[in-house]
Length: 163
Image (cartoon, rainbow, N blue to C red; front, top):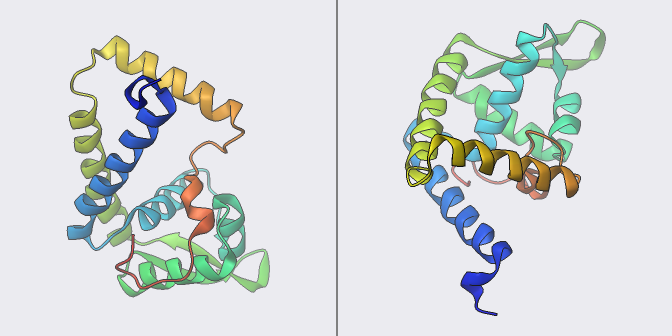
């Protein structure tokens, strides 16, 4: 069987292409995909009225706590998040988006939307919806947690410019 007849190869090829493009498109904002994932999750928990500690955020995103410290350090140095004493645990720090973090996340989501539109341009709206449904079914079957990129759990503490 040719590689172009193997769906898993095509998914892998397209996934790598999209990941590389997304990293490049986020770079002018001073972000990488891991930063984007953290910001999106912080906004969501903030909308739900929650405040997560760094450890809770690391657990939720399946990131080693040392890697999470590095991510939060990067984001805090850019003024995108702030750490404050956690209201329920005086030993922990809650992490939340700053106003600037919300603004940069809005810009980053525009980048993500533009990329998604470009990648899915050959599909009709119905095909796009069908593809999304099929991919959700496949990720559920693989027992991947919704909204968490599997590459994050392998992330080691690196410089802030690393994707």
